[in-house]
Length: 152
View 1 (cartoon, rainbow, N blue to C red):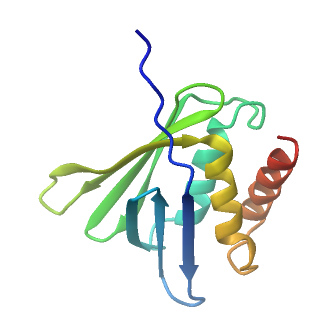
View 2: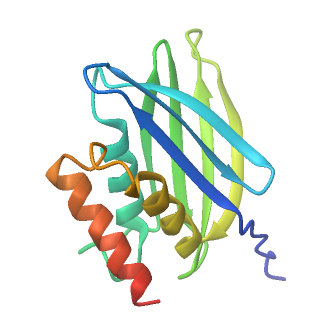
């Protein structure tokens, strides 16, 4: 018997970065599951890492699409591992794990959604803030997500 795909259609992504700061905050929610976060820019650009991970699981978008990918978002001393896994061509499972300073890891968020709902939430969440899209790689992926959504 095939496992049923449960979907939350209310996907929301919000991300706020204040220029000249090394931190950002935001939230990611699907239905009544909500993950609020702070993240550090000390080691990388977390928004760029998030977009890159999502880009790589979108069929027919990345040159070498993947079925499963993760990335680490840091909120020192805590780290969050976001994991994206394609269930099928149109649905994605999202899991977020928290590892604290004593190296204990807990699953803190898991849900499934339509891949296009995830892309819409990301495009909407960063679309009105041109400063978030000020790097070439973020702007490129943002525009590819928009084109992908227009074609579906």
